[in-house]
Image (cartoon, rainbow, N blue to C red; front, side, top):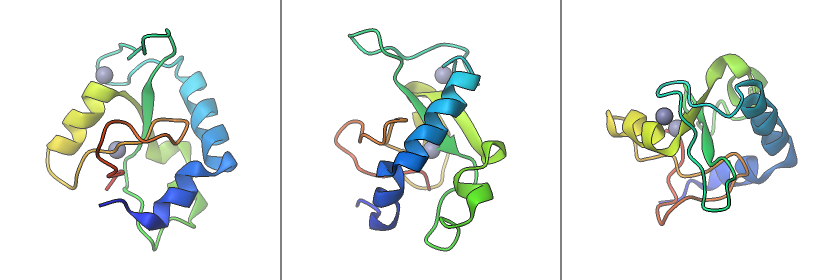
Length: 108
Ligand SMILES: [Zn+2]
Ligand SMILES: [Zn+2]
């Protein structure tokens, strides 16, 4: 169930740069539980979540796709919780655009 329209977006240098800068501005701390999700190697494993989910229609809208007002830095647990609340599957890309886990759903 990968959403092909956003694959290239999440893999783009512009997104990765933007997501990293955003995460750094938040000190890599989850906005909900104020924890960091660390990998075994000690690297923060955080997800930049789109509050307004990306769609094929808005993905070229810079203020939605890249605007920090539309982004939220979450740890994997909180992010899963956000998406479990209802809409869509779990967002499964980290700030590097790498898929997390087996699912390949993205924000939305
Ligand atoms: Zn959290
Ligand atoms: Zn998300």
